[in-house]
Amino acid sequence: MKRMLASQRLLRLPGTSEVHQALDTRWAAFFHALGWCLVPAQMDASASAQFEGLEARALLLSGGNDLASVSDSALSRQRDHADRQLLAQAEARQRPVIGICRGMQFHVVESGGQLVRTTRHGGTRHELAPGDATDPFNPGDFVRQDLASYHHWQVTHLADHYDILARADDGSPEAVIDKQSRFLGIMWHPERADPFDARDLSLVRTFLEHYS
Image 1 (spheres, rainbow, N blue to C red):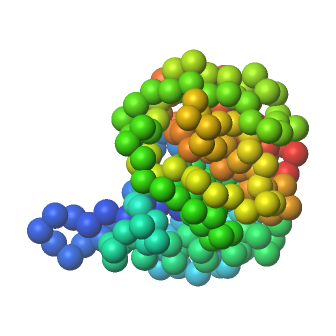
Image 2 (cartoon, rainbow, N blue to C red):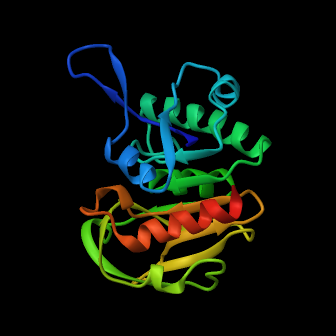
Image 3 (cartoon, rainbow, N blue to C red):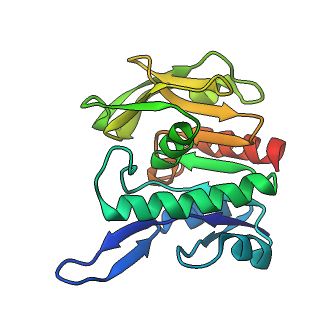
């Protein structure tokens, strides 16, 4: 089974100086269904050593923690630094990268994109429609009538090397691809569906098959 590294959110234990790393256990089940073994990345370990030692074939930039560009949190700065190191190693090795929610935002902002705060996507549901370009994916995977949304920051500007795969009903990008850097970004959370949505599994499977 191929291994995929996954970045983790950072949590400070109340009343202490302890910082914990956390990853939703449902992610392991989601990628296991696709034939991948998900391995949580360790923030204080060398990103290069983790890719080499684990022979990781892909990277998941998971959700959690606002970006440091929109937050004054020390945890956000630490998370950005850790994700930046992992992303650099993935790109140097031409490994596919999947960014979920924060992960998509991070990749977009690192490439010069912009975010704006929104009240229309946090704890709401909305429609989803195919974007300007969907190749090599099944366009039907981007058709949703009642998609759960959890983010409070939405993308307002993208660098030219991204293609928009899907848009929310307000026109904002909900899924993007950067074929040159082998990056897929998704603003919703496929791991939270119970059972997993066949369209999400199809979308991620197609990406990994084409770019691994």
